[in-house]
Image (cartoon, rainbow, N blue to C red; front, side, top):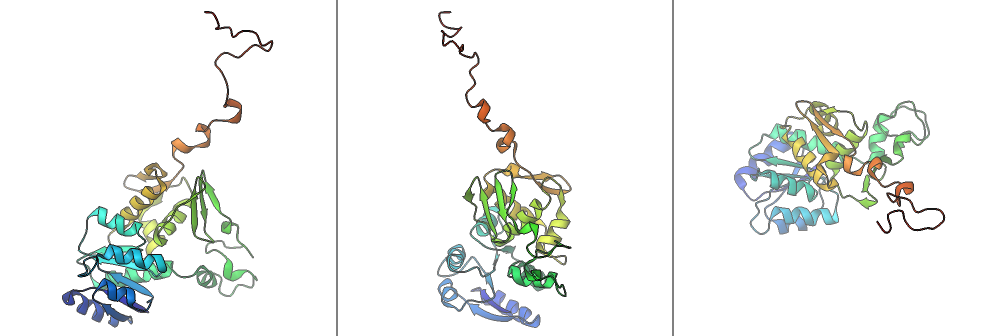
Length: 280
């Protein structure tokens, strides 16, 4: 795998490149944002935010405008607002310094697997199957052939999730999600209303061998809530995990029904006479 390491501090970049090389990664260095944007597109980008010529946030924004290359931000900025901003701009993960090479490799593997084209993932899931539509099957849809039912867009109230195209619409309006945010939403929507434990989410959306802090999950949940426009979409179940459900404010039962659209408190008499309240 070709990794583009965008880091100007040699004390960090040198040991990091050597450590990644031991795991079989080919590392290309870029010390400035402009050099990174001029480089050939790699398989993975490791992006420091504190660059000498431009802010790493701007580099992330420029990369995301032209490519879907996976991006992991590596930075000393550990505040929640910085993490949320980076994820909303399209980063797939965010690591605050200091961190170990093993943790970084685990993050790279998890992000790479989630960024794998759907056809490739389906081929691994259905290896050896005789069904003609095998490569297009969705993992987990055992016993189905051809187009799996889960490929049809799923509606959770006004929220529509299309796994095939990886698109999300809310009230008919597109919602732009980073790849990891989409994976998180899909996992919660697989059994909407049910509580998913933190460990289960990390194992399924990230990696069973994920060594990073589960704070990463909280950052992604915060970003997803912000993009859905209402924190109530994702409920926190204390000491357990999270669940996806339709907020009370947008439930169909709260909408105005056609039969109730015009219903005066005192109906007008069929004869067209004066309203009973008239003249009182």
